[in-house]
Each structure stands twice: as structure tokens, then as C-alpha cells.
Length: 161
Image (cartoon, rainbow, N blue to C red; front, side, top):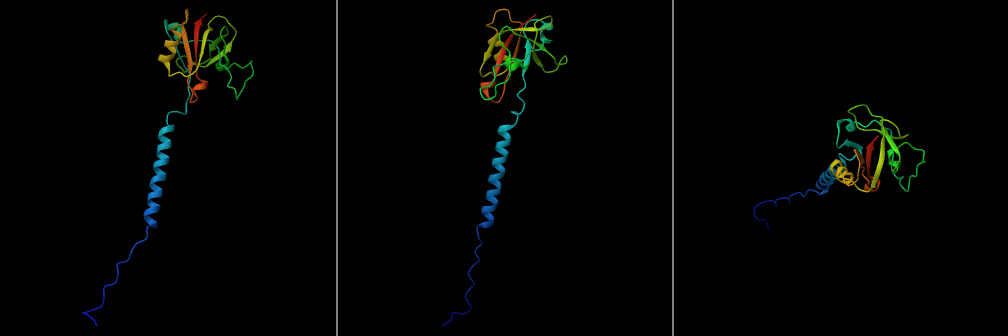
């Protein structure tokens, strides 16, 4: 028995493959974008030094590199890197006037800076360094190193000679 015509064909159902592929691409782009956003601005752990009292102290001209070596990467004591500077040593600035400081450990003499105090541990920048050195009697300048790893951060409180 027939009721007046051919039955309509069943609607064709699409697969979910293209939808899943599109969703995977969107999630991948979101993950890459999120990773980029988190990493931006973390590539340059640049040290900064600033004077606190006089304009002459603002541009240190002493070579100094002082910090405690990281346990996993010990460096020789003869290193001039400021990451290895100790209290009582002197540093000088080898950077051009107005450029980022480039401290190197040096002999104590004219235009050098004596390390009065070394404060290891996380630092948040200039204000933090100035606050920490504010407790050190006789300091004229400070220098800080801020890296992605807070265990490598330090502040040097300096006295211009």
C-alpha cells in the first residue's frame, strides 16, 4: 500500500571530524598565545644601579662583579662578575655614561665603589634596593640584579671611594 508518493530520503548527517579539528586548532592557538603572554618581558634580567645622594654617584665608574655562585654553577673566585662580589671588595662601572651599569670586581681605588653590604634573595627593583640599602650606614649607591629565578637575585649597597 502506497500513500501517494515516494518516501523522502533521510537527511544526511555530517561527521564531527571538521568540528573537532577546528576546536583543536583554536585550543592550540590559545595555548601558544597564553605561553607568549606569560613569557613576554621576562627575557632580559638586566641589572640596574642608581645613586641615592649626589649626581656624581649616579654614574659609578668602578669595575665590580659580585654575587654568590649558584650551587649548580660554581664559578672561579677570580671572576670579575658582580654576582661574585663580597663585602669589602670594590667594583667599578665599565658602562658608557648614561648606559645600563656594567659592574666588574676591581681593585679599590679612585672612582671605585666599595661593597658595604650584599643582600641575597628576591628583589623587586629599584625601590626595593633603595629600601634595603637605606638601612646600611654610609652607602652612596646601590646595584641590584633581578632575574627570572629569585634565588639568583641580589642587592649590593655601595660606597663611592
